Length: 313
Image 1: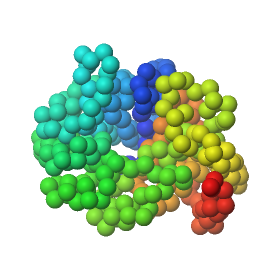
Image 2: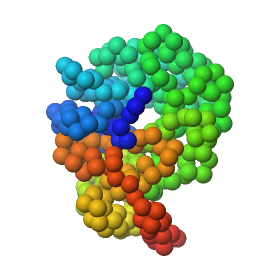
Image 3: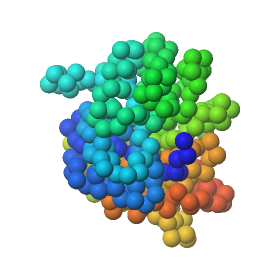
């Protein structure tokens, strides 16, 4: 696959009403956001069944219907739910039958014949990693999926998967505020020729330049972000100040804070692409330039110095 440096993330377009949702979302705006991104040259979309319990995949399918040039479509497996359960409780499974069933359900919701990249969403239950990865390899051999990857795996878990079948890619969290994968995971992926497509590169919207203290305070009850540490004090004040530093850097180049945050993740040679969540067509303007913008070494050091001098406690 030859993917653009940034791709469309479809988590938020799953809508609200779940513990890990982003609040209410207008489906027409979601479709418009996807169309705007594709029209500007982005060539891949990353989604998952659990985003809105199938709704995100359905909206992606709706957005792609009738388009002559379909982008690469990435989705995932291993987080499941019983559609007849009124509580809509999500559980985790990497059983062979479950993964095969999930693949068929995703193909139907997306309205496509083959999934370009099929990823195990979480390595849980840990004891089922080998069974789940073998099932993904079976789907690849059967032509249901083109490539197979993992998400949120640690290096020992990737070792176990690699013993059965090659890993095309890893999807880990990575941002200025969450740089942990630089220590072990990025070098491992480089060593074993595993692509890296990072999620939350703008820390769930915090680094876009559009987030304010007021927006955080007025988030809907079902927006998971208000319960995370970086959206609460004492880190929120530091993080909003960081955004202003990113804005200063971006102003030197005619770029947005979000594009600076994305460029920070893309500076690493191990990182193939960054997943950018989009909820409206207008948001594309604030991120599209990151595909070609790169920070200087001095600017990377400027960001690092700011964090070291402004970390609470």
